[in-house]
Length: 142
Image 1 (spheres, rainbow, N blue to C red):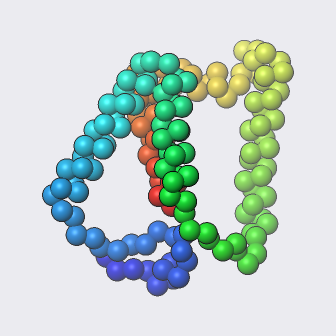
Image 2 (cartoon, rainbow, N blue to C red):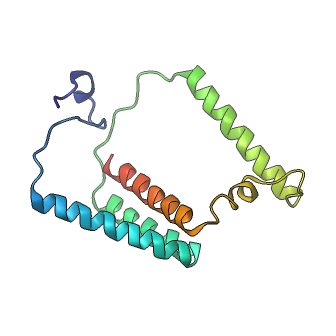
């Protein structure tokens, strides 16, 4: 794959460059993914606090030890696109705050009460934790 010239001028963007993979790198990658999957499986069975604090602390140390290069701010802000996100976030926080204030009555459940039954099965909870850890890693690599 070749580099996209439109994206290569921006220091924080993803670069699509074909990299040769060595068997040792693939073995290390498989070992890391297996370890993360095993951790997610155990964390889903144990308490949520420890399962979240340990990877968060590890990623925090990595981010502190290897800070990313600064990305220059954009020339302008897309106010229409930003307003859509702000409206969605404000509606979500209003929903959660009003459900918390009303003690989550059945006719006004909080988002957490709606998601808990979906994340109840152990394999689904494990996959959710694994996706959360990989998303954190993607933020650190960026």
